[in-house]
Amino acid sequence: MAAAAVVLGVSSCSEDRDPVYQAPTTYVLNVPAMQDQYIALEKGATLELVSSQPDYGYSAITEYSAEMSLSPDFATFESLEPVDPTQARLMLKQEKIAEAICKLQGIEEPEQFEDFYGDPARVDQLYFRTIAQLSGVESSKIVSNVVSYNNVRTYFAVPQPGCIYLVGSPEGWAGPTEANAAHYEDWKLTEPKDAIGSKVYTGVFVMPTAPMFRFYTALTGWDADSYGSQPDDNPIDFPDLTNAEGASFTTPVVKGKGAFNFPNWTEGKMTIVVDMSDSKNITLTITAGESEVTVSKYIYLVGSLSGWGAPEEGNAASFANYRLVDNSDSGIYTGTFAVPAGHLNFRFALSLSESDGWNNPNQIGAAENDGDVACTLAGGTYNGSYVLGKGNWAFEIDQDCNMVFTVDTNNRTVSFKQE
Image (cartoon, rainbow, N blue to C red; front, side, top):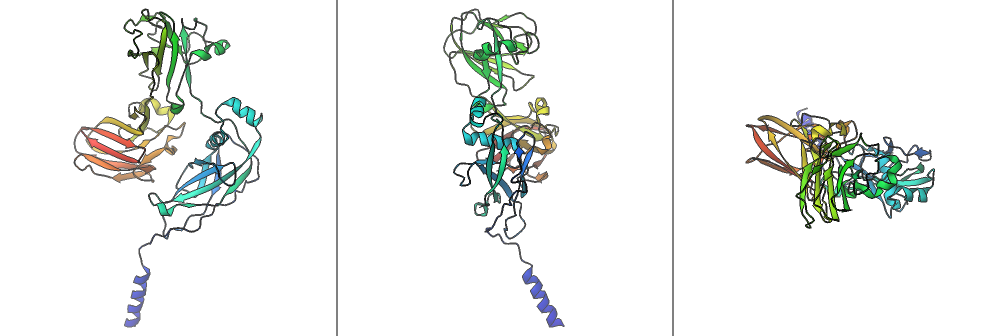
């Protein structure tokens, strides 16, 4: 019996091995249950793909993504991020599918869509494949077979730049109404195409001598949507700007009808930038001549510093105080914030969602799963990487300080430094 016990003990230990990684060889995407059913894509809805889980030799948190094409050979395709990238049951936003269709068809304007698809739009056959991979392990990447949805009707889904209107003496003080919409096409300031949603509006205009103007966010008449130099309907002179190429200044903009007046200006080009990204701090920047404009881009600090507000559009005003900025289109965002002594935990949102911010898929953190990841500041500095997810970097701060937060979206790295 003692000998048998020894044998059993050896056998038990030999089977209790650490898990060993293996590169997967099979990965199957199931034929959709609604493959042949008519589907009209719509904003707010999702499309489902269900795949198997690759065998990595042990239970692992796997990142899933999808690719879509209009042809089964995937000669051209667009990548799609699922709502939850850690689930083999991939839920794809239908609005993102509609955007991908427009990209694949080379459609950028509503007129192009109507000419190509007709009204109502014809149906398409869409092809999908999915990709599974362990974070940071190249050999773990595996691509599924191709499946299709065969009866899909799409819609025009190309994000369009927002705009505001310059109203004043340069255009003849025409009323800012829908009846004059065609007139104001030549007097729009628009968001750059690479900064849609930024609420930074730019335009270059040939200004006559001594121009006077204000701005309107909609063509709803004289009173409702006017922004100018002061609340009262009286102009304020700005005598310091001359026609010297590159001469520039920035001044506040408020809700109201006070015009910006330039009595010393002689006819010439003027670059105008109205930054409405912070509703409490709207600015106007005027530059003499035609000037290239780089729009600042932001990501958002989500956590104890920002009061754990949900990262959604409804909280944009409060998040204006907790933004990291990229002023040079470099993909590197920085921000300096006052940090009190005590427990500090946070993650970031690459953008604010329209609603239900806690399910915002653009959150990045120290880990995929929601919760604190204990970290330390070595010599007052922390350097590391980030992943898509809700894991919080967590620190115990021994005294009040300022901290510089840096997020490099090119390399998916972060740096936090006490000052």
